[in-house]
Image (cartoon, rainbow, N blue to C red; front, top):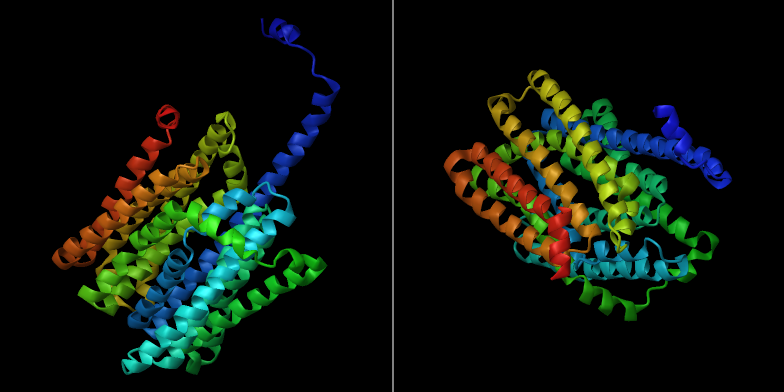
Length: 443
């Protein structure tokens, strides 16, 4: 019967026979690209993890807490100063010709520069008038980091949308993966450099290098002619990105509001404990979610724009399976390694709060799943639903942390993380189901 069914099948056409090897080649290329992306993401994540260990061991938990707040700022500032334009633009430039895509990219970067050049001097002036609660040199260095990291992060997002994935990740390695390793190496060789200031100088220096490389790429081949911002394009982009702006600000605050509340109620040392455990579990988020998405996000966005959602749902389902498998595997590795690592750090406070680590790890698994379905909603252009969910998630995170942190300390903050992530997962999963999405689209 099996042989008969094969006989009944139509013979493959010459074009199909030629396409077979080509399809396999592209499969191999995709797998190779995905491997390189995962390797790059693994090195970056490991470098950040080692920096957290180095800071906790040699600088102290208070300095780690300050570093954690600055890391939160590198995510919060782009969300607030970005006006939701990044996600809006990357959806538009996926399939545009370069001559049309590059002015949009230039508008995005120009607006970011203008915001920083206006706001940062005002903040430095306020710091000086208040008696420098943050020393001016440290504040200026932090401001430089925030601006350059913002610009480089946006550039990487644009390059990924234009399918220059390996280039984007090479630049991401420079600005996020290399400098922690250099700072650690210098600190181990020269003990006098084991300071927060030296750490921030190393961070800023690598951001400058990455920015210069980006500038060189723009100048090369006369691309700068297409990168002149057309200010008439900004207003339409701002108008269309309002819902995504709510999403960016709300989503970012929802993720990082906990450590600011912890620092207010529990102090910088316990903020450092929470930041350390969060940094470890974020390894899973970076590798399992971001590593998988980078290779296919452009295809997911392009498929989401089509009227027939068959391809979109196939890509989305494949992504969720891959993300889930990697999440479970990496979570198991982190769960085994962390308790073995803590005794070597010489920080008993970390061991005393080991149970908090398990709660944060569980919350991170839920957050990975929720973020995966969040990207699916982005591809489906469900901007209003995305904004509402993110806003309610931020409110829930802030309220839960404000209630549970004073009552139960770090256990309360970690529990708030679990509840918020579980709620986001449930709502986003429901809205990405084909029958639900189809019903919403038809109304």
